[in-house]
Length: 447
Image (cartoon, rainbow, N blue to C red; front, side, top):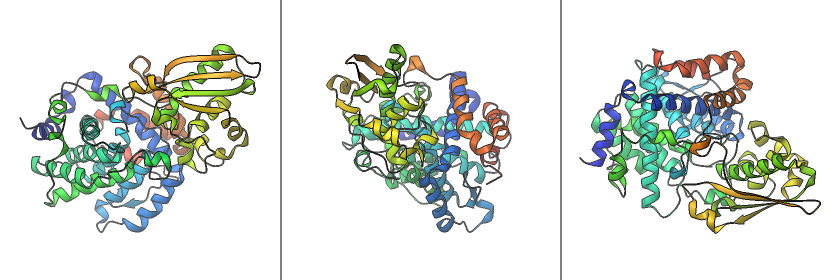
């Protein structure tokens, strides 16, 4: 069977009740994690700018088709809502990821699904969850194909748009021809964004996720109107081999989740430094130097004082300094005025990145670091090679861990009562007759 046809059939045929229990549970975990950080991501300047932009430029002509910007409650077109919620979903850089995808599938899917749930009148919780799983399986495979067929490291939007169009297309009931076109349109119009240029000069463009969600939603709606698309990506490079595993090899089970609001490349150094500090009873004032041995891409992260939220997230020294000094790196730590904290900025000068050829060999399948700490009395401590917290199969977050993270990021926005109601809905979403109730609860009435 043609691999693109296999992908289309997978999207159309998959039903919630056919999924293994482990996959069903992981789908709910992924939804909990990503919807939580999307809600919290509305506090970021990038999200606030985008919200104003879509209110000005994406007002739909038909009020019945209007969709919700979660962080404001305002109604705009489906394409505008996908863009605004996409920026918020990756706004804090706390969304999930997949190592070999080298990016963030969940944030690329959820905004499209939220808008689609409002457009579709007869979509229930099972439909939503099945579409979410479909999106993960195709988005991750599209990422792996993209990286295998292009020499430039492209950001999440370049392949997330393809997965988003598949997920949203399933929810909106596209037929086989429309779905194939939607994925082809999404591939062709997706932002082919060079990721490492976004590391060299950090900006609100970040991982191009917002633009990818906008493209995905646009591609679905264009395909519904008869706009044609190229043959999708799943016939390219390793596509036939990867699509052969659809419905058997559930890649969603290997997601990593993020306890910190920063680029995942910063997480292994944090793990190594915090372990040394705990094991040897070190106080921050005793530390004179922290050398971070890591893979090349991580060492190219900035170590200079951040000027905005994005620079704080893509900053090896800032993230590590926050973790050492404050024991946390959450939404408050990467937004003003915390990024101007003088104690944190001074501590950054003690941190030195070092490219490590051995650690490089494991990237991108492994995200690792080795941390050396030197103290004021001349002692030296070495962490050995460490993985990021929640980054490997032997250290996946428990449901309790993800619930605590969800409550931490959503309660300040929604209030504890509403956050708890949303949490309960997610864990029982397969019983919900109206999937768009997720949007209702995620959008704070006070806004």
